[in-house]
Amino acid sequence: DIQMTQSPSSLSASVGDRVTITCRASQGIRNNFSWFQQKLGKAPKRLIYAASSLQSGVPSRFSGSGSGTDFTLTINGLQPEDFATYYCLQHNNYPWTFGQGTKVEIK
Amino acid sequence: EVHLVESGGTLIQPGGSLRLSCAGSGFTVSSTYMSWVRQAPGKGPEWVSVIYSGGSTYYADSVKGRFTISRDNPKNTLYLQMSNLRPEDTAVYYCTREGQMGTIGPFGYWGQGTLVTVSS
Image 1: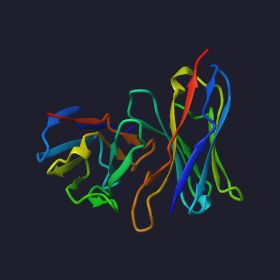
Image 2: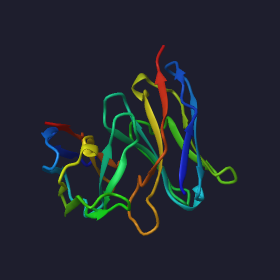
Image 3: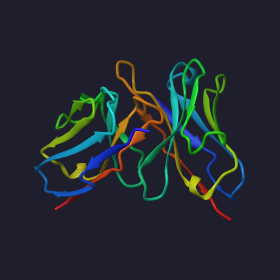
Image 4: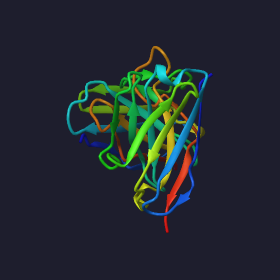
C-alpha cells in the first residue's frame, strides 16, 4: 500500500497568515492526488484535484502543487472559515489512501 | 444538482449483516464511478470500495470478502452490503462519486453520511 505522510499533524495560525501543508507519498503517484478540507461533523470537501487544479467554488487563496511523491497545499491569507482539518489522498494505486490529517487551529 | 443521500446505518451486533443505501439524484449512478468511504470516530477517512460504470469493483483489504458494493440502476441507488461485521467497522459511512465533468479523480461529491455502530 502507498503511505501518505502529512506534515505537520497540527498547526496554529492567525487570520491572514500564509499556511503550508505538505504530503509525501511512499512511492510515485504522478498527479493522481487531491486535497480535502473537513469541518467538525461534516463530510470532507474536495479542494484540489490532479495535484494543482482548484475545485469549482473553492476560493483562490487555496492552491496546490507537486507531482510524483511530494505535494503541497498553500492557503494564502487564512480566513476564519479555514480552520479545519485537511487531508491528502492518492488515487494512483489501490487501495486509495488518505494522509493522517493536519488540524489547522486558531492562534 | 448532484445529491447523495445515505441510509441504513444502525447499531448492530458483531457478526451481523447490514446493507447501506445511497440514493443519487441529479445524475445517473451507473454512468460514473462511485465509492464508499468510512470514518471511524476521531480518525481520518478510509476508502472502502469503488464500483465503475462498467461494473468493475475494488475493495480495501480490511473489508475484502465481507463487503460487497453494488447498484440498482432503475432505482439510481448504490449499495454496500456488509457482513460479518466487527467492532472496528464502526464508522460514519459516506457515499461519494467522482467529480464533475471536466475534473479528475474520486470523491468530488459526498453524501451526509450514515453511522454504523458495531457493538454488543
